[in-house]
Image 1 (cartoon, rainbow, N blue to C red):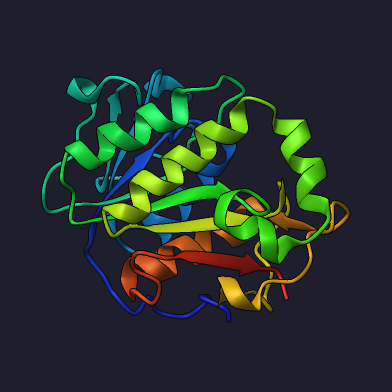
Image 2 (image 1 turned 60 degrees about the horizontal axis):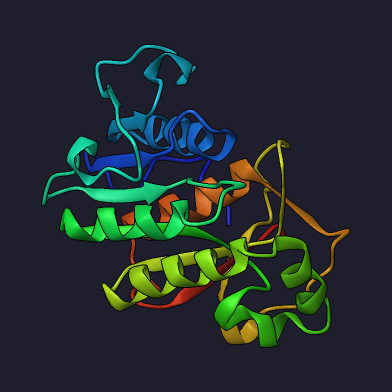
Length: 211
């Protein structure tokens, strides 16, 4: 499914968490391209390297400190948060939920938590690789899902272009986890923006696929 044409929903107020990271930047660029107003949150807003726009507002904030997150009740939050340190994701999820935004669309990892069984044998190897970060990811996902948000479980991320044949499926339709199969951050960002504009998977896990 391509989004090259006119966006289906214009003028939404979106908040991007971890906007200076590679996935956060992809989310911010795609949201602006579709005509939305974006509040981009990062510890260092100077690292949010997207062209200036009247619809872009950059804010300094820490995902672990709810008081610094510029999240309002009418906004939809899209999270590109990722970390090598256990505890950050769970704390961030709780902070976002506490802010009571209109909707939350969160990024998780395919093969963890609820998607482990569908992902198959490779999920066990992934759990060993993640170590103590696995429990953090699962807790964050659970927090978001319990609040009615959508969690996108993506495979290995790359910096390639958006796939013109991309699609989003429900968890039950997921393929076995393949460590050689990759999906671009641009593709994942487009899928998450689709969900923000037209909710299909509230309170559940969705799988973005390149083909």
